[in-house]
Length: 360
Ligand code: ADP
Ligand code: GN1
Ligand code: MG
Image (tube, rainbow, N blue to C red):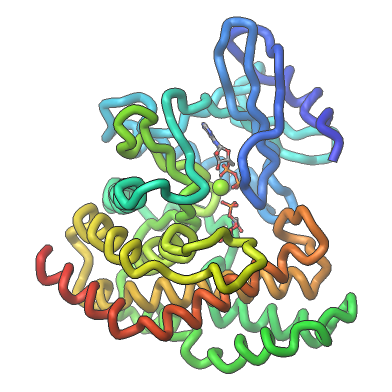
């Protein structure tokens, strides 16, 4: 991608000063993110939304505006909620020549964004951040939200897409991934467990973030306490177990999501316990069944993510950004290793949740 693609977009926005530098920024897999600095020293985050992923940018931006306003009312610190800057003609985003959608956020100053927790306390604080986020949205009218990616955490639907990609085998890659395919298919029945409980109404639908990676939360650089939750494109009705589970998948892993040496990849029980403690403290209103499903959330979000990476590998890497040829396959493998490790630690995970639930 040429780094010049932002050139037309950037002049559409009202900014404090003139831009003096624009750099590609962050480690997200979906959007193109740029850090913009102006001659007054102000910093902004300019983002090109991935049009292949988000089919309804108007609906998505309506969600973002409503959510950020709702949260801003509950925060004393103005950095507690993302702030969008309008275009010169008063719109929330602009459409580039190629149809791409661009938006401009204030840069959250005085913050840090981690790719892995540096201490257990960091991870605990991220649990407080995501738990508080869910709590702040408990009185948000969920029915007004647009479903920005239909069936996002519908794991059986992810399996259907995986099976279709496997059958099509567009690039002839299926022959390389036999063990991974077997791993996925052996868990198909269990993979639908959360969706079945959601469909039957046993679990309450809440407003959830749905992409609770550690690098979607900003901590205060001095206090290392939560400042704000970012990447709001997938905020939709969902289950508490999705948000809990996706955080464990990413932040309780002992290696990076794309680690090639699988022997380094495990789920840390210490990190699992730390996150559980923070999440239960920040979300005191979870039902007993919601609490009991937290380990399942961790396992199924990890399995689902692995299925998504493997599907994308089979389809020719059309969804997630990749930086090397087998990137998606490496990512899928780490997720399956994590799932296997969770299976070996299942009783301990359940015991931790039960013990901490009794304390809360
Ligand atoms: P993606 O959907 O591609 O993950 P994100 O919105 O998460 O996009 O942005 C990618 C990265 O850019 C984040 O992980 C974070 O490091 C940084 N970032 C995004 N928004 C802001 C912001 N408002 N202030 C500071 N950093 C930000
Ligand atoms: C994507 O956008 P980002 O990088 O925060 C993806 C998540 C995956 C994650 C895997 C909209 O998150 O669902 O869990 O990659 N986001 C979308 O790292 O698909
Ligand atoms: Mg992100």
